Length: 172
Image 1 (tube, rainbow, N blue to C red):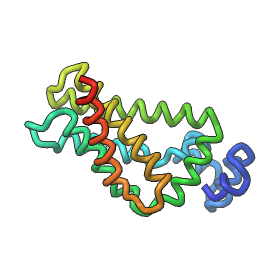
Image 2 (tube, rainbow, N blue to C red):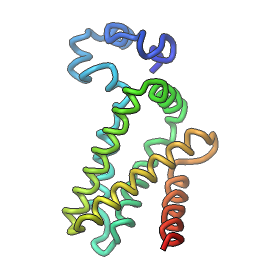
Image 3 (tube, helix red, strand yellow):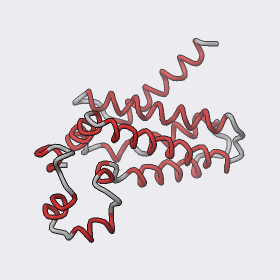
């Protein structure tokens, strides 16, 4: 992240990253497919935490309550990461190809959560709608978290779910 911030994403090479980390390029490629993946490291962990939370939810929980618990389960991972997240997001926002990759990663996250809901017996379209709504809440809460120096991710996730529910109820 420091190199991307110092030199710019396009000007930073895998060789630069490997050298800064004290690694060979070959070692770098054992962990990442390309330099873009450095920005998305940790996404798999978020997915694993959410899917595990879906599986662990009480059997009688509604699909949206299950997804709210799953999204809320990742909030602690953000506690000390705001400075790095701000740098990361700035890099992504400056590069359309990185924005595209982020959208793809979020779509895979929603798919994994929907699959977890289906395993719980939630049929489509409810599984897909709940999972997509959960990812939308995550994105909205994350954007607010980046914009606010004193808000915690967990509270923002709860507020965004409350807002989603209020919007849905108002629209009926």
